[in-house]
Image (cartoon, rainbow, N blue to C red):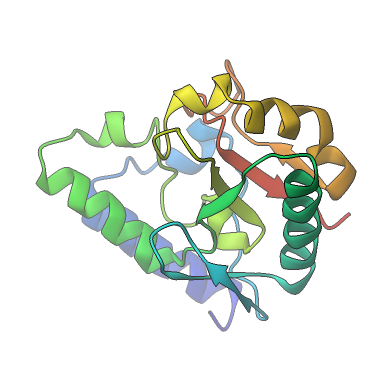
Length: 178
């Protein structure tokens, strides 16, 4: 996006097309996530799709993954950067399958408000656990992340009872460049 005004207009149109309430930005308390200018290709994800992250997030992810492997922990990417249009299309597909927008917004942030737009968020998986499942919380990989992810700049974005109204996502971690 070339500027903030253009971005907000585009997001408003995407939200309207999906039936997202006009007060979503204030009611969800999630920050607006701007798409980064620079992204780098990562390794292929679990589904053999190319993923992208900011250079700093990719470097931190690579170090964290290698450290986990060194401790016998399997970690792999399920998802990383997603643009505004991709988020719109993801939600649209769920609407087409009969899900309500209210239910969808408990598991997917509206376009513009997903940390995936920042190029710093990763959805992670481990062997022996279904992707994007709360069962991930019961794995050695999740416990390793709880104990070690901060050392690599990552934090769990949506713990139980988070203030954003997003369901608990033990697989979703975000890198902070601060």
